[in-house]
Image (spheres, one colour):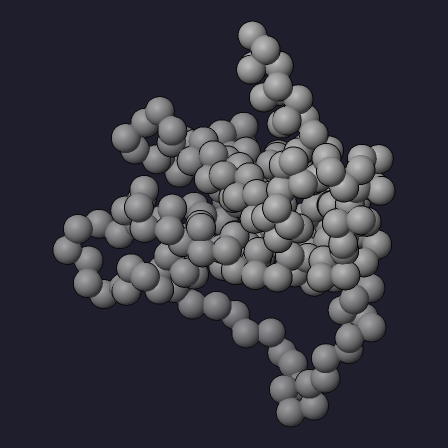
Length: 220
């Protein structure tokens, strides 16, 4: 019983240290955060930190591992108890990926400005690519027209793009709405041809100020 209590206390302390680290990342870049900053933010002393971590990077690795494990669990949720994944029968309540992002909004909100932990976004998308490869056959057997690796990359980065735009909009729509849109996008059958909008191609200019201003309204 005593060991259980110590384990719970250790997990709680680690959680508080990680929360302090996340809060500090809203104030300064990751590389500028020190152990002293973390313990002061968490209202601990340095000895408490070193009982759980040897150095700051170990805390970061622990945090990243936890976040990736959460991603894997959320990604697999729609098919965790099934041998098949039927996109036509999928409901928004089956897709909990956006709930996971929103539940960790304090951290993911940092993506609005940069990759808060260097390399995390790359690890995030590479985890999705690995899950597609290991868990799901996107193409029927015998289909050699489409490169499976390219299709998986297209899907993974497409989902990452949806997440990034949602974060940049300050989560202006609900996780359920995003899940519903993702399902509809995945089920969308492209037209055989598209109407090209009349435009002044030769004089096209990208207005950054207009783009930035409208970015928050991309979901409306």
